[in-house]
Length: 199
Image (tube, rainbow, N blue to C red):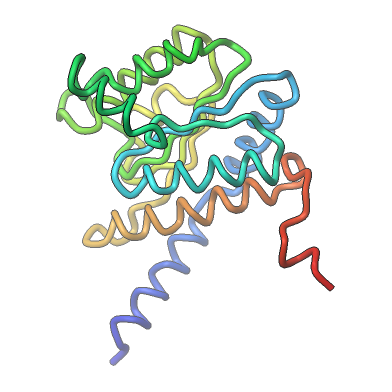
């Protein structure tokens, strides 16, 4: 009889092993191409994924030399847009205000990937519609079946929902693994991290 901790760790290992590494390699290539052609990275996430977005922006900027932003870092603009224009359009309006273009890349972290019909994370859906119209590159790291993000992305890493009762914690935990892998990838990493650079 295993403990819950042993069970959860075992599940995490199984899910991690089931991720398709070729999709992460493709994501690294697309992100590097956007950066190298002078594009910007816009990272989108809601809830816990907003926390990932903020942390990832820091690492992409500092480690990878990629000009990166997330709307959830500016609470004044975000809440003004929600108050004046509504939740569904808050990310889309922010991307339009940022003059998103075909050199840029949008990186999405989401458990479900957005679903307009089910009225879940519609702000992600609307933002990705703007990104597609602008011909920006779209990369997703999502769970479940990938939702709208997977349907429109240029590449999408789906964290396999092997354990239906724990889709959210496994997806959110392994999103962090995925983007730490990306900022450490030789195609993207330009600067050594602090602790690894110390003798």
